Length: 609
Ligand code: M6R
Figure (cartoon, rainbow, N blue to C red):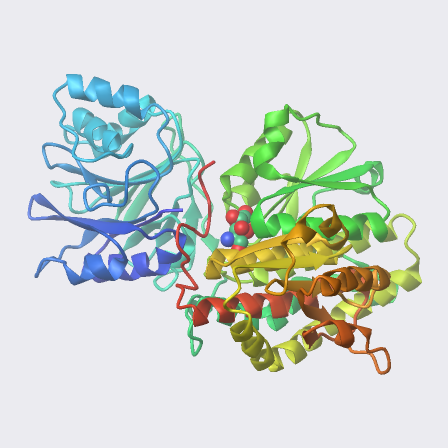
């Protein structure tokens, strides 16, 4: 959730660190800071608030050829100047930036205080600085290694010492660290977006690894201090993909990118003549495929909603029983892991702590987990037994949009694949993949009419709360519509199965309540219409997302406003119905003056439990 960036090379480190921090700001953003070893001393500057606050108050003339920087999302201690990272040892020789949580920090703090250390902050991270200093003579790597022996918890760290301006040491356990290899320069970051403006050659550290970086060399060692030569990987994200271009916000840019991102997800993975799909990377042979009796998907937030959509596809189309569970709850049941169940961990970032913990629990008990992930090289991608990359390109806005639609496409491809190995007819398979191929064009048509949604977002802006209702595959879309609205506009919203309304929430309906119905003309359409009648009878204000019909005007008669989406196979309708909801939330948030890309209290990847 917090972001780390570090540099050692021949250039001025400060602009590189600040630029990297700004690219990481979407991860967490309540304070930030930098530390540079300059002429035998550590120059440290940190500030609560946005990075521009820290930048604005930087001392004149701060310059050096190495340094570390951090953007923080508070866990231990409020977002204040003192609690911002880097944290520095009492002798001023060691500075540390840290992502993760030190579970035994209270015990370590007491121990260090007994040694005479004085703590300046309320953070858990500060123990790292004092511990490393305690062991530091003239070998920073050994000091870091000694310190991490004491730590229980998760960390991704980068460390500099006042008397070693040519060196940055970093280490990882449970919180991502990526190294970037440049020409006579090295980078370190918690996320590749911080460094791809400089290099696309990267190394992902594994848990237990320690790396020592110099301008023209690096060394990586594992938890046993043995030298390991790690694979250098090429990141295929382009710099334009992490910039806003002509869009005012990343979220709007990412909504508009869905035409391409959906297409990229299925490109090369469909075999139209056989009405099936091909997915490399699953690591399942035919026997194992046939032995699958059930599917279980674990995810959080928007990814959980994508998994719910997919569960309808698996049961309805592929005829494989499928359950979905919120990852954060899963392992506290002491879950029963079944060898004929195939598990999925679904995560845009591939770093969500709850999803990762579920994955590890399944594997510990002998289960097999496939990852459905966007970020290549992320922890879930690396630790799962196989998987599908969703290829949506970097998603920077905190509110997930294009990842949601690509997750659905990736899982749809799997559903067709497993379905065709079972009872799905070639004709149905062909029809489904043809319908999928037409989706990007239909997304384009919806986006062309985005202005209409903007007008409606303005109209419903004053609502205290909004209900989102849907049935079947449209129920998770309703959940997603509600999540989008509350996370970026702060208007309370609730998503419900349309039929559940009469079991309680109907009490909320009056002439001021907007109710958004996700009502494509599928086999549940008639039933959804009855639910609209129930809302109308209580004077609720209906906004319906549906398909146009040449003669049937019943939705128009009940709804105050209607947004039309093109027709498609009902299994694919979420890819279309969700787009007006994303736009609706976006425009409501903009109109209310919210910080759309960085909504309050939220971070892009939630690496704490
Ligand atoms: O990276 P993940 O897909 O694992 O993230 C899961 C949730 O934290 C994420 O979807 C969150 O709900 C988004 N802010 C939703 O827009």
